[in-house]
Length: 143
Image 1 (cartoon, one colour):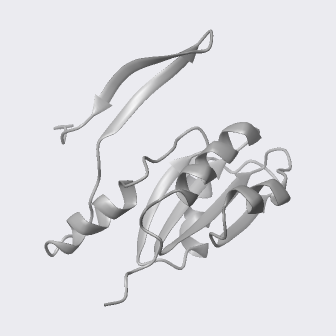
Image 2 (image 1 turned 60 degrees about the vertical axis):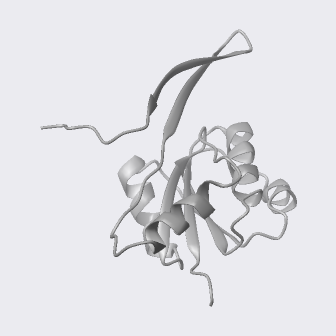
């Protein structure tokens, strides 16, 4: 059985260090049918050689907006350039645990689902310390 390709869209602007960590987390996934679509939303140039090196053979599509168009437009650009059956969105300061994609794809394949999401832990860094803020582990009623 062929596994479906998952496109991980990474939006970035002026944070090359964070981008490298995000792309590294995608490259370390246990699920291997992946591509990364990086959308630079009008920010500083990134070192594509570093990205290729850290991506460990992961297919990477890099798109750069010449001016900032905003987070939503960067997401749309990513969608328009994605080849995968499924899409995961990351911002440059996000990262994935190593079995994240495999867990989500396994979950979505268990039923006839249109979408799937996972738990998100939110942290803040202060003075070099990682401080846990909250997690989004359950659906929330936003009515």
